Amino acid sequence: MAESIGSLTDGIDTMIDATEEFSQLGGCATKVIGIGETIKPFIPIITTISGLIKEIIDIYEKAQFNKKICNSLLDRAKSAEAAMNTLQRRKHENEEKFRNQTYYNNFMKFKNVLEKIKNFAGEVTQIRGISKYVNASIIKEKFLELTSDYDKCMEDLHFTFVIAQDEQRRYDQESLESDLAEMSEFLKQFSENVQGTLKFVQGSLNILHQEVSIIKTQFCSKEKEPADTDTQISAPRIDPSLLKDIESEIPPKESENSGAVKKFYTKNAIAEN
Image (cartoon, rainbow, N blue to C red; front, top):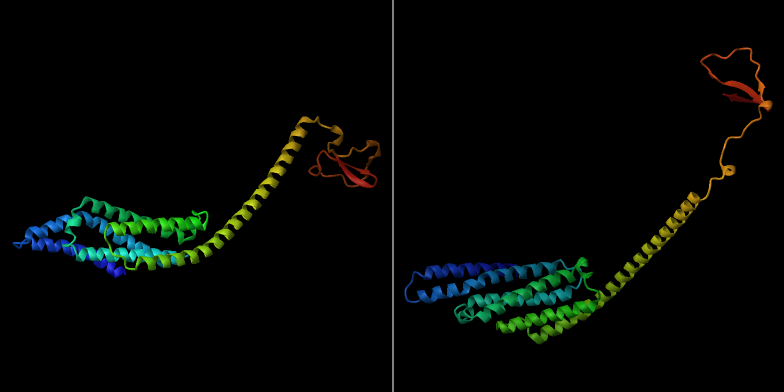
């Protein structure tokens, strides 16, 4: 499919080159030049559409979720590709369409719808994009809206559907039922996990708030209360009459315990400054 898209853009360039060559010929030169000039405004749009088709193919190949839904969108991308190829082959027959402003406007709408389809497919097939949709019914509504817009554009441009519309709608319905049933279960579990996480975080915050409030209350109450000297921690005082001198035959060195005197208190040596 990617090769056919590449051949589409190559064909457009070839068509323009051909008009330049044919312009040297007589007789039909004016007509050929007219076709080349008429289709030029459509070339950027056709190029953009070709790029969008490639992106939709890439999204489908990398899909993590809703692959059947994405496949239905891919069917429409293939129809768009076939329509571009047919338009190129029948450029002479479509010359009057290319000159019509309404046809050009419809062509722009077609490009815009394909861009929306590409964005939607990118969202519903990846975990990051799915979080945008609250429930599976929203995915279904968006899918039906985009496919309806696409079908309307195809009809306005008189493009042929690759797959019969009745068959395509049947496949769309099967894809929606299958993928959305799975998606509903996923979103339910996802929501439960998120709610459980939020409850845990909220509970932790409540406990933290209570602890901070208790600490703040205790701190403020201590600032207001007068200091209690009886409860202050201090070293025990010793009655000097219970201290006795130590008899030592060796006088202490001047460098040792300078300014301190050793005495006994209940058979324990105590250094007194």
